[in-house]
Length: 640
Ligand SMILES: Cc1cc2nc3c(=O)[nH]c(=O)nc-3n(C[C@H](O)[C@H](O)[C@H](O)COP(=O)(O)OP(=O)(O)OC[C@H]3O[C@@H](n4cnc5c(N)ncnc54)[C@H](O)[C@@H]3O)c2cc1C
Image (cartoon, rainbow, N blue to C red; front, side, top):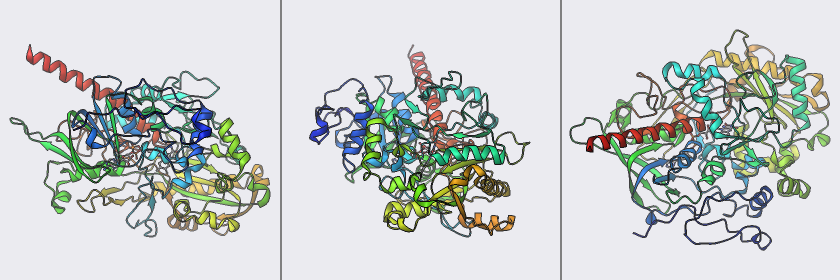
């Protein structure tokens, strides 16, 4: 076997003469020190220069399996939000050898880096594009579920909103998972963060972490009007910082986003980029893990995870071993799938697929949670004028409007920096609640009632573009059940890892979630009808002015409810039967196997799930390193 090549030794090569002077080029495998990120304008130029090429990738070259070692200290399965964090933290110690296996590609698409490229990512090769089973509470519709298939994972195709949730979320976690209370998790949020805001708040934010969190580079005039309207019409006060736990989540305002200098910041562009050049980190893309392999050591009844089997980018089946631990970071669907395929899960279900049982862990695949959402949309009063405010208008013109392009490339500003959802807030539909059950998200264009249906079409068939002459301008306010009570589950469809899981979201099966959304639709209507929105507002398109009774609104929600992309919980951590992993994230019934990703969340923190996932991985890295130190000390002790 050829000698191992360091994972990220090849610097970005730019095949355009106009850019070659900006970035150096080499194909050598000689190890290099950690790279200094290119200045912002250079980075944005790189992103624009090669929409379909490799130039924009965080890692241009990852290692083929034939060039890699066969044993590592740790094998990380999945290079998404959590996997990138672990890859970085565990390789800080140069003596620790880590292999990161990612099924998707490097993040080489232009649309992954330019914030307003978001809708183009849905249904693209960077999206697993899952579909649920018919949903019984949603008129038996099958819902489209985007999930990232690329370095950076789902976060690389996300809307970039940065939310940690509320201390009450983690107080609830700690009831079943000691060690995850607010005071335990806050240091890890801060460790992850590189806050970019000009307004300092040292108590609430981290400034030294890898992940850039920024104020919006531009706030749409309609988003500004929404903030005013929410105050006037609904009494929601301006909240300058939704992530400051001292002041709480209630209120409205502009959201903060994971962006650096106006470009998307993903776990790959932050955590993985910072680890570029480390010889002890090997990254393989196009590597689809299919099984975790166990051994039964003599004298112990606990199976030990020792290796993984995967199909590499050339289609070859490869086996690689981990001398310390295997770390599952495949996310909310792939992690329970891999556990089940490897014999860890609900015994009866596994037997029905002819899978040999390694450990009967009934909780694997249960406890699926997501943000159910519903839309209220208004047509514009002055369609031509409001085109200038509509982010869809700019999306349609991406790459075509030279002024917009130059503003983005040279200043990191303007409409191309928009995450599409710029402002919003949190509210309690019942004042006696501990934490807000409703999130509002303002979207400066007219969305279909189920936008993920149309955005997927947009990405795959270009229907948004084709239909733009008929698409009205206007605005949308989305209601999200921020702390859902409904629970779903996932199951195997077959024993082939390439078959997606059978997803039963079970949205609004708990009436409390439906109640939250009905309240939300009414509130969005009230806000949309406030005088502050007058200059932008024409007719109400969705649900439509004739739908006023609770029964009508409920029916509208059942017909149009969609995901707000926060699926978590399918390998719940905690103590007892309902948990799949213990509070140290170790899979029950086996040894040397942890789950470190969004699937361990016992409940969904109100707000988006990306920041909590990276917090889990930051804390997970410390737990893993502590266990290694303990094991080493025990070995030394035994030898002495
Ligand atoms: C469209 C969309 C919008 C979102 N918007 C926001 C937002 O605005 N703010 C926010 O905080 N969060 C947002 N999220 C959620 C956030 O991205 C996720 O919570 C987070 O990425 C979950 O991290 P994870 O590590 O658990 O999984 P992921 O990030 O999904 O990573 C899992 C990785 O494992 C890989 N993988 C899967 N199967 C295999 C296999 N068999 N072998 C090898 N690799 C495999 C996948 O390709 C993927 O890269 C959004 C998500 C989506 C999809």
